[in-house]
Image (cartoon, rainbow, N blue to C red; front, top):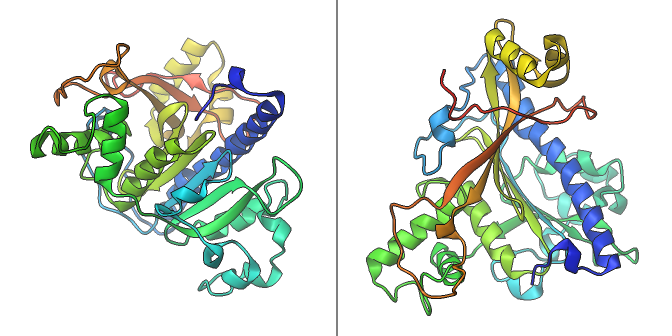
Length: 352
């Protein structure tokens, strides 16, 4: 059962603080790998980088882009606690894919294994990020959780690679629909059409169209499954098709992406925030020559139709009603400007 911070013991509050610090630091690195490094790879190979269109960020958007080998894709799962053994039928991680020197030897083009030390996977080791970045290139998912093999409490490790998410979409939709009180017993109790709508709404709940590809599907399925576990969890999904880094957590749904800005837009942001354009350029913007680009986060919240009803009664599914709405947009500082704070910037619904 998930609990708010105010409901935790002091030792559990300490554990959550450590988890949140780890997650925040990890998020910065994953933004770099997913967005900045990918953009640089497009440039280095003379390929055109298509920035995300505003329509793609609106809830229920169906627009998709062709995948590119230059965009870094990955799936990373971060858990506050150790994943319960009963979930191993659906999140498949075993000794054979744990992060150790013997298992890493079998990975093609992975050169770090001959220098590998077990402390590398601990997130209080400076080598941990290097190990993480090398393993991001492989298929499937990486799992970060409390390390049950060490004596020290509240120590987080990259415990497994090649983690497969194997929970049927229908089961995930049924689990969500029960919690939201659209069904009582099973997904098909109101007929095939209602079951199909509820499966589509599962994707909408996590900010995706139901036609999205495998990695984003695996990510949102993992996020729904981990609601069965103790504590909180975060799932990061980097998608080439959407050129976006998704974050699913107890905070809700967020999408990180690159946005291109003109000189006029930069002047407007600076004026609104009350600082010089030079400060904006130095701390927030990457120079493209004629244009700048920056990291933008679109944060979403769930509507009344995708939250449990207050009276707890069963209700009728209404497909036309949105389950997600955009609530805020933040322009994030550059990764080498940790002193700068994210600033509000309304872009998705702004008039060009």
